[in-house]
Amino acid sequence: MATEKKDGRVALTIPRGAANDEPNVFISVNGVGYLLPKGKTSMVPPFVKAEYDRSVAAQNKMDEHVDELLEAANKPLPGTV
Image (cartoon, rainbow, N blue to C red):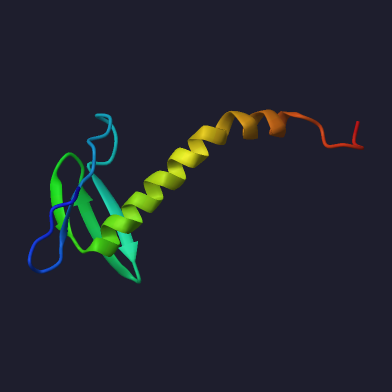
């Protein structure tokens, strides 16, 4: 559960990546950018955390379907063989 400060900000911890990954994550919402360090907790507006969570969920959904997509890409289209 996210902790909330009086100004409405919530805690967002972005996991540390591999050693050769970028050390920060850039999140932009409505033209305002946030550069957040990986491996640390940052206090951000709730909509920034919501966008990060949405992005992670979308990436996880894509990862679930990578094999299906690769298999479909290697099959010839019907009527072309």
